Length: 177
Image 1 (cartoon, one colour):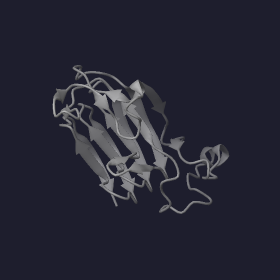
Image 2: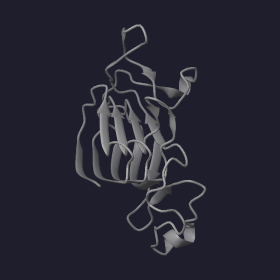
Image 3: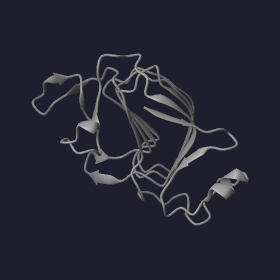
Image 4: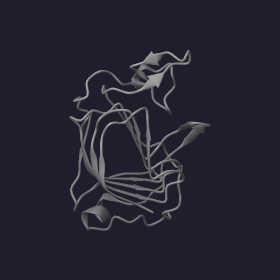
């Protein structure tokens, strides 16, 4: 569960330690990085939210499974498991956040997105999300049933939005460039 509730005036900014933006700048309404160009990416991972909502996945033996490990976390780590049978599962509230300069590429087909949502259920609230300069996708859903609104993705290295494993939610008010 992640409860990251910023406001329009004081958003929560997830960024690299190399980004010299300061809390004082944000408090004064200046959300821009003083030293990183908006095309610099891959400086850290990203935000990964894992829940217990249904997914459509198979294991390495091509058998259907209800739970699997997310990209970017070793398969030996049980903290990387997501999926289940609770479409109403809640993974918290995420609002007024900015995710910047992330998206580490661990290997072919194993990248970390700006915001990764694995098996996140409809009991989760996600709105007003900005992803800037992510090496892979801006937002990617791996199954789940969560609805997301008010998303801006700028300078993603791959897709602005991406879905996999039968995501059954909505994304409204999306802008990507």
